[in-house]
Amino acid sequence: MSLLLPGVHVPVDSPVHRLDPRLKMVVALVLMALPFAAPGVMSSLLLVAAIVAIARLSAAPLRALLGTLRTVFWLGLFMFFFYFFTTPGQPLLAWRGVAVTWEGTVRGAVQIYRLCLLVIISSLLTFTTSPGQLAQGLEASLRPLSRVGVPIRELALVLTIALRFVPTLVDQVDKITKAQRARGADFHSWKPWQRVKAWVPIFVPIFVAAFRRADDLATAMEARGFRGARRRTHLRELSLTREDLVAAIVVVITVLVVLTVDRSPNLGARPHLGPAALTAAQPTQHRALEDDSCY
Amino acid sequence: MLKDRRNSSIRRRLSTHDLAVAGVFGALAIVLSFTPLGLIPLPNPTEAATSLHLPAIIAGILSGPVVGAMVGLVLAVSSWYRFGATFITFADGNLLVALSAAFLPRILIGVAAYYVYRPLRRWPALAAGASGLAGTLTNTLGVLGLLIWLGALPAALLVPVFSMNVPIEALLAVVVTIPTVAALRSVARQGVAGAREHEE
Image 1: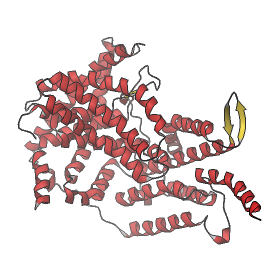
Image 2: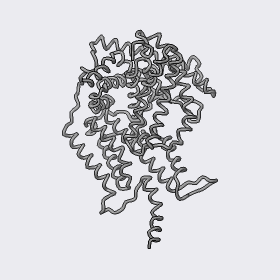
Image 3: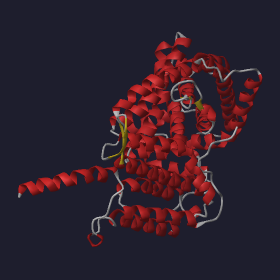
Image 4: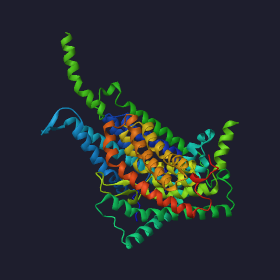
């Protein structure tokens, strides 16, 4: 059984790999919000250029990076056709009451561009940060919540155990599935009830096997002297370096430029990619007519 | 003082066994998220029913609401890893809406399953079935309902999803939860948390 991973960590030595995982997580979230906050053409081009630069700096394999887009292919297609047929505007084609509009075409394309950009950004994060670093970064970022009773250290331990046991459980799930198939389980019946019933002999042994593993793990942890997640320490403690500071300054400047480039008076009014701009484009003519009528 | 007491009470309730159960069932949630087993092909209009939430339901019944919430959180993190871009696109770039819809319902799956199991614990099969149903509704209606409530999706979407996906996902959860809980009741040395008399 193979894992359908969108982007697997590539352990190479690059400036982006060396950055603090907390910084990378925050930057990824900020960059993910940017295509929506700055929908202009110039800002979109700048954002794409910035992401290409990060990809080059991180030495991410281009083919694998673009390959991650396959995970959202069907969703992207669905979104495009959803906006293609449901956005009102000037009809390009009309057939039996179903109209395709110019606005719908542009809006669908914009949503696909955003989805692709978001997938590339999250893949860059996972390409350059190992699951262990991500768990440690998540723990450090959420630590303030422990003051209001959220068991953050315990959560980090749970996440670490979960990541450690993924390959073991994939193997076990694969064996159980193959064993039940060999016993003649019918997963292709047309009757929903028959098909749901066929999955029961797969899931029940999987859960029982997982519980037995947890039982063994708890015994092993206590035998090795585990006395609660509170006293747990890390081999490498996270600390912000000068490289992190420089990267943070560069990101802040880039974000400010992307946010302001389309609003700059020297550059004049810029066309927007966002749906708001599309809906705003139509009433402009009406407003002009209303202004004329005032005279 | 009160805060310290609350923190320590959560920690005291989390034994090494609870942490191990949360970790291994969390791993199972990740495995289901990234293998075809998480989206079972079934003859309904969307051609698939999710089984990703089952580990959170079972963990909630087995080891209590905190462990159920932890497995739900691991599920939410792995789901965000795979579908975060989709959530942000649906929420039109509003990170708070996307994060709330992706995390809150998943964290509540195991909690809902535990609190539905406890009052019905004298009838284990009924309790397990009702917990499976409650967990499924918390997941599906929670994610979609939050996206609709926060204005990220049109309300008209709730009716087709409710009529197409929810019945078959609920059926799958009920049919899997009943025998699984029965099997785990005989395997677990310390019993099932949802069925213990002394728990709150």
